[in-house]
Length: 209
Ligand SMILES: Cc1cc2nc3c(=O)[nH]c(=O)nc-3n(C[C@H](O)[C@H](O)[C@H](O)COP(=O)(O)O)c2cc1C
Image: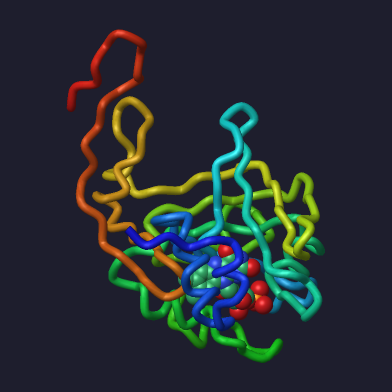
């Protein structure tokens, strides 16, 4: 087995290190973040850092890169207080990946990358019409991380999903929705159906349901 130490990691060439460390969390969710500027200009960017922070209240986090250069997603979600998370289906990963390109301010990634901006129920941030599961989020708080990145915490205000994605017990069937997931900074995967074990209890060996 290969053993890499902190000293090895520090000495790696920059891109090699970036590739390696970005892969360490394992498979990550694929979301497009939809926002709008005060003048109405829309913005869309693929993010892999969305995480669950609590169910009651329903909170989700995301991590933005250092705001030392203009970050449209961050600027827009701060000015409007709202943003949308939109799951990326396997069929649309190329377009989703394209949103990470450094487009000028005036260009909307919705138009440039082939997505449709859809406004629903008077929410100020645009949803991705092509996404099978979209979430309307409101900024709640943020936490500066020592490396310059920012953890944004938001409350879930709206969830829209295709019927086939919601099971009777409230769990989501992300495979039925056609969702993809991400590895590193450029790998997109189709996912197999899960083996589900239910709630784990001491003394009860989990059995596939
Ligand atoms: C697979 C993938 C995952 C990404 N995840 C994140 C992320 O979690 N946070 C982030 O700040 N940028 C992430 N990015 C980079 C943004 O997509 C990219 O910086 C985008 O241009 C940001 O656009 P904005 O300036 O309009 O906000 C990711 C890029 C790729 C390709």
